[in-house]
Length: 360
Image (cartoon, one colour):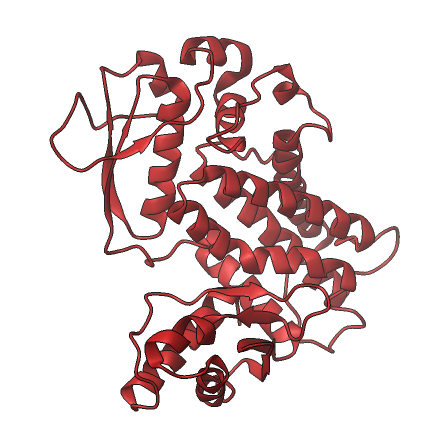
């Protein structure tokens, strides 16, 4: 069970409790679950009982007990505990089951892994100044929202800069419009699109414009072109390219990826894979949060974290056999994890409007 699925499961339990008149409170539009902090209980925690206690006119602990009864029996949920003043803590079934679910979802959805329809009822019109960072940010935010089912368009205060097209930016219309607008106004880049394209090219320019939070100044120096570990963009793209190279290498050795059932190989889900698997499970939630908060920088940081975890996993648990070693179930599973990481990286870069080359 992924975090998004757990969130829907808890929301369904709230709805059931309300329908059965066990709980008299408005059903929230969504329920947020978070990974348990170090020292906490279970895999995930949720504060929905505290949120509903006031409207339900019940103690939070009582609301938590009502919801626990309805969540505990759901498939994929191993144990539900009540902690503190009314937090629900969830322990999911065997990690291998949820890991396989994540890998299967990535394989099935491809670059669209993490897309959804949570914002399908929302319509937005983004308005920005005739400034390159505002234009690129508005377009990236628009992409994130569309990936979550929203609709809308982008407008500019003045006629767009012709060089924006080379950065992948289009504007639906320009001028001041007499309709509700969402202003996109990050700290200006301090350079024109043409200048950035000449110095950095489109991919590095977009990364530099989007990597920093909108209220921070964007780093747009030559370090964006350095092909080394100190450059996060290179590291993300190299992780993707390495994942694709592993697939090609496995084909030459005559085997393909397969998320083997837990226990069928000595260590199909190595401990070193845990951070990477957890990040991939969290990826849909990060994309949704990036859309809701108009924050493409969250997606960039997520990709950096996935790339870092990928290399740690790759170095500790090589997906390809060495020397005369024959491919095992563990290798096939490791390859499945590596391929999924490559897909997540490519999909995230695509949402930011950045290419993910298979060779670097």
